[in-house]
Length: 227
Ligand code: ATP
Image (cartoon, rainbow, N blue to C red):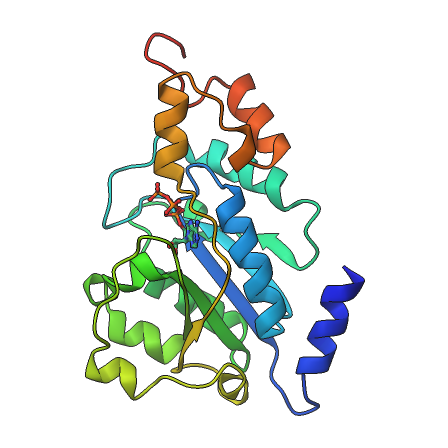
C-alpha cells in the first residue's frame, strides 16, 4: 500500500484533478486477471480511487450466470483488502440494461470536475462503436485501453487517433482522451473459469482464495446436476 501511495503522490501535480477510475464488467466471476490489470492501471495512472461497477444486465452479451447479489458478494470479497478499490453498486441498483453512458452521467453529476478514466480491455474496445451512445461516453470520461491476450488488433479509426494522448496528458482534462496502457495481463477469462467449473475442474489458481471458497460454498457454475 505504501508503495502505491508513494507512486500516486509522485505522479500528481498540485493543479491536477481528482482522478477516478471506473472498471465496469460482468465479473461473472471476478478473477485474478481483473485484479492484476486493475492494480497496474491504478498505479500507472496515479488514480485516487478505482470504482468497480458490476453490470446488472450487460447489453451486448448473454445474461450473467451468477445473480447480481452473488457477483457483488464476490467482488466485495476480492476488493476488501485492496486500498483504493471500491465496489459501486449503482448499475445493480438501477436495474435493467446497464448502459455505461448512464453510469458515467451519474458519476459526472457527483464529480463535475474530476478526471474520470473508464478502463476497458482491448477485446471490448474493439467493439466500442456498438456501445449505446458511444460518442457521448467520450464526452464524459477518458478511455484507458488495457491490452489483453488474444484480443483483436484493429486499425485505429479516425475519431480515436485524434484523441490518443500520452499517459500523463489526460489528467489536466476531465474527459475525452484515449490512453493505451501497456499492462502485463494474464490469460484468464471468466468464460474459461465457468467452463472449467462446469467440467468439475479446479480453478483456484485463477481466483482470489475467498472468491474460490464462495463459488464452492454456493455451488456456482458447477457441473449440471448440482445447484
Ligand atoms: P467473460 O469471459 O465472461 O466475457 P471477462 O473475463 O472478459 O468475462 P468481464 O467482466 O467481461 O470479464 O471484464 C471486465 C473488463 O475486464 C473488460 O473490459 C475486459 O476486457 C477486462 N478484462 C477481463 N479479463 C482480463 C484480462 N485477463 N486481462 C485484461 N483485461 C481483462
